[in-house]
Image (cartoon, protein in one colour):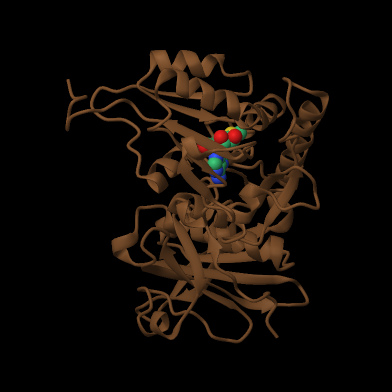
Length: 403
Ligand SMILES: C[S@@+](CC[C@H](N)C(=O)[O-])C[C@H]1O[C@@H](n2cnc3c(N)ncnc32)[C@H](O)[C@@H]1O
């Protein structure tokens, strides 16, 4: 019986290891015939971007009582020099030791194959000695093998080469089709995916998008509906979410993704989470993946041009009242309002006074059930928190704003 759990795709930055197919074995990479002895795990090493097979790697000669196995690999000549072998060897041996319960992975490199020996060392294997005459060369004559070993305990001793990574993923306003290919890739490769929710028993807005692509979304509570500055609840929620991220890193996670609606650099809770994590774990690499913002989505759904020629665009959150909105109508050509649910009537009054009501468009729950897009003059009564307003610049002639 195989010592390995069902081989799963193993994903790295440059390669993906997937189970071998008949096509892969029909054209094996030079110098390496995957062993089919029923006790191993056999993978095609594929280029992450194109999916093209670049070689093979397999774990074989499993000794269940000693919890050991051997590893062998080959990368096709045209794919060499890109670090594929090192990454594939690291992925597969760490999988064997961490996920499959083995204690030792052994690699035997021909004494003359210095490239293979370098790959072993770069993947963290230790050189243990030379087995004289243990191999047989292509000429049929015995040759020496350099024996390398990697133990489960070596992994614990080895300081992590890569710093932990926290990625703020913009997943757009609500329509799962408005998620970038990069965000989808990172959702797949992240060890942990966190989604902000108001309560643990309620699905979050980012979560409903993320669930289209992965089942691994885990809820963290944020005081998303609090008003009035840095409330105690807000600060406690940032700390709690940071605790969860740091615990994931301590448990071995390399990438934690935090999904946020729209763009992570536009009025997002991610900003505060990232700041807290950075303070408490300064070696964390923080990255963001841009997302489509609510204003872009409303522009598209309502057929409104956000800016042309030399026009300026002002984006104003109205949690502090309409004064900033009034100023923006004077200062900018196009004005976008966010977070104006509590002052919608005043916003409409301001637009009327400024003679700008007729061109303005309103959109609520964009991309979500109950989406509502209409001219702003048709708004009556209170509007939901997820509402966006665009007041386009005044345009009279084609190209009139080009200078
Ligand atoms: C905390 S901000 C988040 C902004 C978001 N990060 C972005 O890039 O668009 C929340 C505000 O964004 C706007 N918003 C976000 N998602 C929306 C949606 N699906 N429909 C309408 N407005 C939305 C609303 O104005 C809401 O009050």
